[in-house]
Length: 51
Image (cartoon, rainbow, N blue to C red):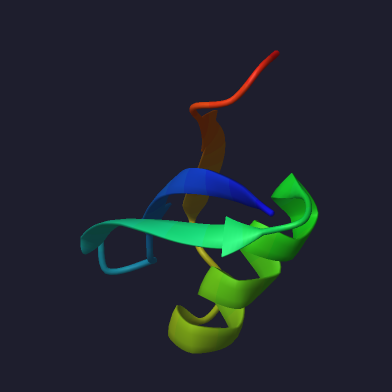
């Protein structure tokens, strides 16, 4: 499982930054959006590991 650093900004411009573990970037984004709702801006960056 990979670790991802997520930045989620909602329509009220509240910024959340967190780290999650997921098999893919899409799964990481889905975890965060299921918890906080659809984001105005959402980014996922894989942290560590081989490229």
